[in-house]
Length: 408
Image 1 (tube, rainbow, N blue to C red):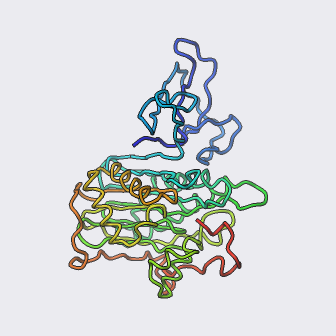
Image 2 (cartoon, rainbow, N blue to C red):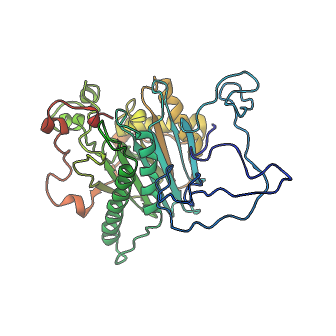
């Protein structure tokens, strides 16, 4: 497994060793990307910049670790080619990992068929396992402009909102749930604003992406989503659960009685009905929650993974089978899931973000037929009307023939 966050590009900063430093470049305080002294927002992550950016102390050369060749493991030269075998290096945006704590990790990969990686992931986790974690995945709409930049900015903006939100409300489970749902709405607002800031003016399809996030607050899990990126709860014993309901044409067909397999393999299976962006009809997230009363895994992923393994039970079986080969370290397990999706064809970008609840284990799941399924409760914000959990009307049913804005 190789790769780092894409805006942490390899290179040498400062003056050559032993030489005086004439000037120090400004960098974004959120992601460390280079910025100009007159910039109001970071071009890399979309963070708002304060009028005065504190300069770091003068430095001599700071040399980052050499990149490893994905073909032979040799060292990649500054020109982007391996010094051993001559292979071109993989872009750091095409494959990167995040691991804020040993119990939370993610892998984001370009896949095999796409020219660029439009998926994005952003994570936060407390040091103590099970204490507090945030997992955000955004999938850029491939036919929209700069969706790779917008999706990464959106994921990080939402992560930053949720990372500092530890809602306690009145101290009861119900009020904490409502407060977390409100924080999720604020996070999606921030993500949507980030997409808009990265939208190119003029004709064409503006930047857009899907959104899904999971917040673990001790024994409670809250997920929120817009589009068809997904969240799963996969207990060690019992049935795996798909917690989100896609905002897609396929979900409409499933609600109408079509089998999941047929709907998700149809010609318009990935026509989404809601998304983030300047042309989004509604970006209010739908939410669901689970009480985490037993050990298991929280999985947040893009359709590049669930395309090949959709049902909760099937995803649970895949995760446990993969863990039997990779071990139960979240980063290794996420990498194994991405490798598996690529082995199935890698038709789309692939992101798998995992959080471990309870002690590590490699045991397989129990028979779902003989175990109880954890209850999933809609938050008050989404539970009021009977139609709150039903997919929204398909965008192309309102606007005629679908354009690129509704295809993920």
